[in-house]
Image (cartoon, rainbow, N blue to C red):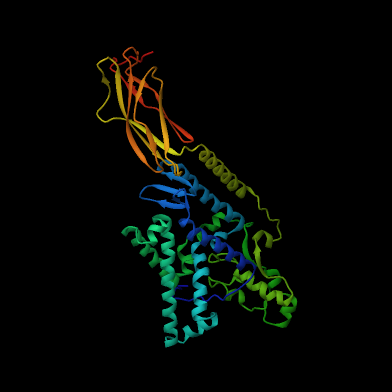
Length: 447
């Protein structure tokens, strides 16, 4: 890490295997599949996942969301925020250790590459301490070259969600997309080659506000002081099940901290130290001295997973999910708006009937491959006549057509009369509420 001396103190985490390391690898695999495969999947002619910012629409597993669905974006943001609150209150920094892109990419790509090219922890430390030699130079150059290739790959994968996988990878995307890809490539390359754990220690705000989200009963990685102390490197400590001061928990830590010093903001709760301690204590025939626990548990108090904090967060999460599910079930797969034609209030025809001209715009957000036919009906104006052209739209097609509404001269309408325009298509209906204007005297409201 970058200390007060302004020199880079490199962390050389040792490789480790174990229960929690295996769980993390499966989690990392699932997250990689979501990132790398989903943008390539096509459902009804559209990508399974794409955020099209210029067109202000999102493709999500066969559903198309547009700017009119902003309420869903708000609900998603609320859900993510309260999920963070809830899971932190219960499980601590589970996000940092198991799902954060910084952790996922470092553990899945960077550390295996370093092990392959430069060797294990001790070999890397010894070679770096010797200064620049030909052996160190070519290994660093090879490692950084692979890091650059990985950075380009991950930047392209991330941008595929926004620019379209096929367009981006085949060179058909625009200069903005490739410029952003270059920026993300530079960020990842700088992070992989130099910044690394400093991001978690100095930049990420999560560690700072975690104390406001967690409490004494939140799950953390804990050193069991009662059984581990006093630590000593001797046979008696091994027989007693105390810490033998092997420092393996320190050697495997990607943040370069000693979990035996107590809770620290730098800890990302990755549980590598647990696997390290288990690998040592199992051989000695004793239980691990580093485990998932809580402050309340270490003090002998009963741990309550459901307490006021988690109940409030859980209730809010359920309310958000229920609201989103209800709105999604009632969502209409098209958009419709009606506005009065510019410069037109009303027109009196030769037969005395009054005509209002509107512009009706319909956008088909149904991802289906077949065109959808839309029917337009008017109510609230008695025997009004509706004139418009037939509308049949393909998926994502939008069209604006004139909508002419005529009422006979015998109709006794006021100067302004509200009415309804019903647009029906596919599995949904939208009711619009424009007003009809006539030449009646001001103050007359009609029957």
